[in-house]
Amino acid sequence: MLEAFMEFFRQLAEDAPRWNFIFFYEERQWLRIVSGIKYTLLLSVACVIFSVIIGVVGAWLQGAKSKFVRRSVQGYIQFFRNTPPFVQLLFFYFALGQFTPTILGDDGWTEYPIISNIGWAIISLSFFAGAFNVEIFRAGIEAVPESTQEAASSLGFSRLQTYKEVVLPLAFRVSLPALNNNLVNLVKTTTQAIGIAVPELLYESVGIWNDYPSAQYPTMLLLFVTFILLVGVLVYGMHRWETALKIPGYGS
View (cartoon, rainbow, N blue to C red):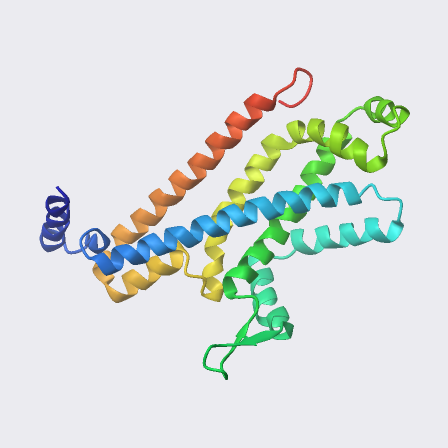
């Protein structure tokens, strides 16, 4: 069965040279695609998790008593919302990356940075999406009635306990539709990691069609379909989550 599948695409490449699905019948190219998908998933999952954590913490810090803390959070938001994510990526990797410590390799003289290009991509993209998530959660917090927070305080809850046990669960439900949109945008933005040579799917795809120009259209098609499926899974999961958490009177 597998041989027939591979033979079909070999024959297709001969009959229609512009549609050379080389990754379906040549193992080395297939492994490049699999590796690219693996790193795309790694970037997507890591950035989604860290950006949500940044959003939750940042939204809480926006209500801090310290004016310095509040202004610091606002400065962070303005910096990352008002500059292109690709420029941020280059800044983190080429500028800040110069100041990070290095470790010696097994040969005793080659130095490697403790944060790789993949690490910098995760950090940069997480902070980028996190800035939007802070505002998303802030809007959700503002939708929680003040009387609800006062009731928690009257029961002896601290500010942190009120936020964690009362405000955040309600605000999270209100924030889910906007959060869904931002996370979808984040997953699509992971392709910009190609700028610092992170071997995600776009990077590997470009490598394949540079080596085999006849594979350009098939590789672009694969890239397109893969992201449709990846984003589709995320949207479906978020929608199911939103439905499960919905409370009458909160959320859409």
